[in-house]
Length: 189
Image (cartoon, rainbow, N blue to C red; front, side, top):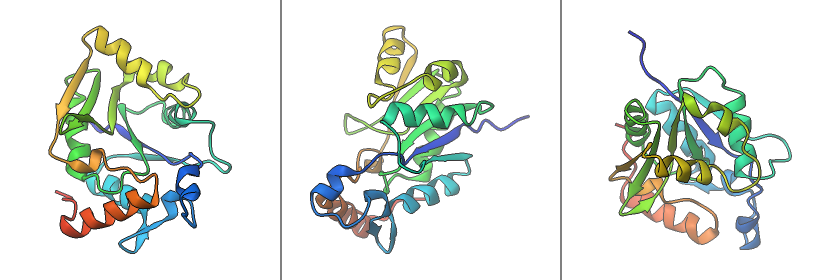
């Protein structure tokens, strides 16, 4: 029996202009949070989840989230499915990644929620390879998700992980993440 293990596409191709514009001295993904870069927190969580990973961080970045998703999916054509995870979510738990992967066995698209807020990673089954690989621009896969929702092909997954919505776009976000991390370290279970 083959273990179902979709590939986590970690999106790290953005320019991070908002972070620098508010006074950040580095790219937001390289900013230190509890002694290590924001992106490293995400990569460590993916490793702890035991899922395959593909990092999208080309030199010079990408034109937007759609381009980043297309690069990652195109680079992993034999994946069993994909979990699309922005690299600026340092508090997400490995248990969340496994929960979305598990739910993806029962639905073509899985959208996680925390406290009625949509978060990441969004999971896609193999049926969406061509559509994901064709994405462009900055809108990501929102139109794909909406079209699938209209067809009843989306599972909304309620989770108890604030980390799915706690992204780092500004220095204030980084400070908030540091406070949350100190108060409640993410579970790697």
